[in-house]
Length: 181
Length: 268
Image 1 (spheres, chains in turn yellow, purple):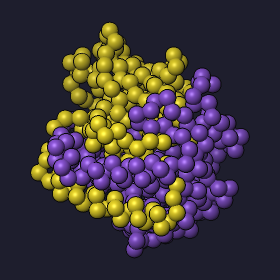
Image 2: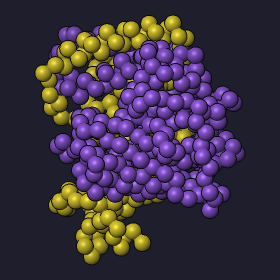
Image 3: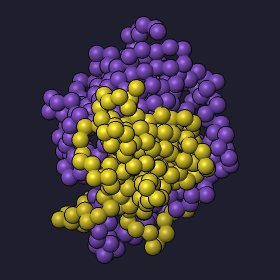
Image 4: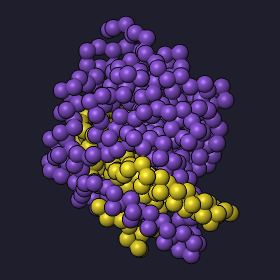
């Protein structure tokens, strides 16, 4: 396990910090020493950040500057919107597998992008995710969302692909709509 | 379908505010059964909370690398390196997508599973490293508890969770529901991975305004349990969810653990 490259962004460094926090092992004394130094660093970073605004990249799913995000990398493939990612233990759910919440968040993200691309206004809607098989950590995944379709033009389908297999599927549409049946 | 029993509870907190203080220096103590946490619950909580503060300011600092370089970058990298040296086995690094996922000592759970003795304590700690409710994850946004045999969750989302201006991203809400619903099952001793999650956005959920999640088990059979939940903000239900989860027995748990050893190869 390496640290972080000098050329990495501050967000990449913090992302590595988070990963190591949830994977390291230490005795209580060592942990206390780390905590003291982390507190001092946090205080200095808070001072340094005073008055600064988030310029870009702060998105909670796709934001490269947001350590909460995987992040996913947005793209397109013909009519589909896609988002690529490789999740780490920071986003682990069942052992060795991507957290179901991270997957749900990825689907919400590509669904919202597909809706926006089609010019649909933001409105109440439902997203249903079906987890077909485990999605593994450490292997690339791709979220894919089709353009909205159906008689109302408000429903769409999406999927999560890993190693050529669909591990999860999703559908979205108006709340309580026929599409749910 | 089966009827639900009343879950046992051994750890009583006085108020939701106590959740913020669990395993803090002056807060209530809840033991954690994970090997990487047991015996240093308080010290690790302190480290995680400090890193949580670092995470919170990162998006703002990311736009000003010259400020970071001039002030804190060296110390940040040094802290990362010190922690990296304490990671005992190969794990998946952000810059190393070819890395493997092996059995991880920090995440192994002893045979004396804490949730069997104190389910309220288990809910409060959550999956301790979990990205949504884990007390020992620096990115988790939500705190969980049990109230009147119901799962409740508390969160005040920040700009880390913002989608449309001023609103919490739907994906953050969905991620929370995944755990809220799973934990509603857990307080009745049922656990397993998500099979299906349905989330409905009814109204915008605002950043900076306290949220309350509530969830209950609806019904269960031998291999499936279904729970429903809602998110309430300022007295308004802004989102609802329903989830179907597999009910795992010990054989099932061992099977999914075996996936760790094949993460490098073909998906089984």
